[in-house]
Length: 432
Image (cartoon, rainbow, N blue to C red; front, side):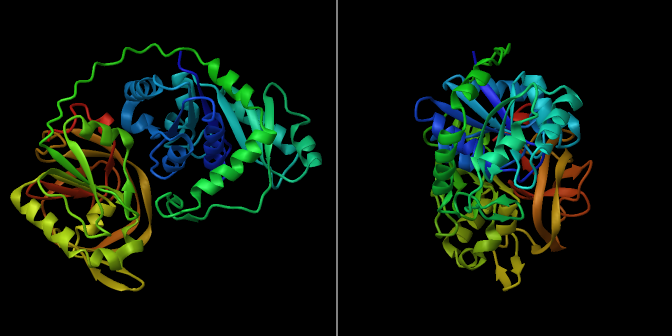
């Protein structure tokens, strides 16, 4: 059996992440808990990791496919007592309903608990719950009211709720977690994250029926899925250098786990001007390099090391923030800051670009042979203000990429793109 439950809502910014993390924190005092996150998200899983002490795993039907989602859910749930899956946006939102939290619940047969922000409503909460449940026949078993002002307010919210168990509430408190254009502050840049989770968990333990949360999760049917035997071919002499600091923290845990099957992982910080000698692979994920342009522009040791490795043909993946760091410069309101100059591309900032993407490989690479279709996503506010590269690996079916739908700029065996890829969704895996 794989006890599991989805925490969803009617919309974004309802408090799902903090309430989900607080539930994980509280349950972790007695149980082994794993957090999961629906959709393409790097930020919320960081809060889950703090709450449970375990990495959180993404479940994305678009990028991973149904089999990939089942495989990951089964694999990462088998060593815990309960899995808490935080939904994405509102229950029926996503890339259309087809890739929504509702469809994830339906496909994985996972019951749902709603978190509703009641700060500006009372009895209407019952109508919203009824609508969410009846619209698609969602398996909603419970609801937690968030931002309740008083016991009277709580009574108004719950009095007309039917066919869904009211599990309790979270009082309205003055503490809020700040956010940026891509979501909440990352745990790498927000040192009060653990305090926020602890504060909400105290309210959860006082006002929410956690035993009922566990009972709902325990009612989920077993997953009928044959797990694949995964072989590790790690060569202790092969090192994967992965950038990780406050500027570069956007990685899917499964991507790291797949790399760890073949390589010994060593982390390095471009902000701190670090390098990894003897690397056989370099991976620079996304994040917020624009917040640390001064430090990054001064990381001469890191930039020279990367330049030498690219010249030697060492495989390198740079996603979004990594692409920005390997560009000629990053231009912000404070000025233009020189970067690694691996790619003749200048980076500035524009409107938010986001969405799922389907890309076709237009040349052979470690992402696949020419003609391979890859699913990923873009999520950035940066934008090239000039591009003098002409060697690209990806051509989008939709989306803009680096230049007119082209992405994956290539220099030797280094590929930099705005496309974030989940390795689970690659049919044959990466060939490096």
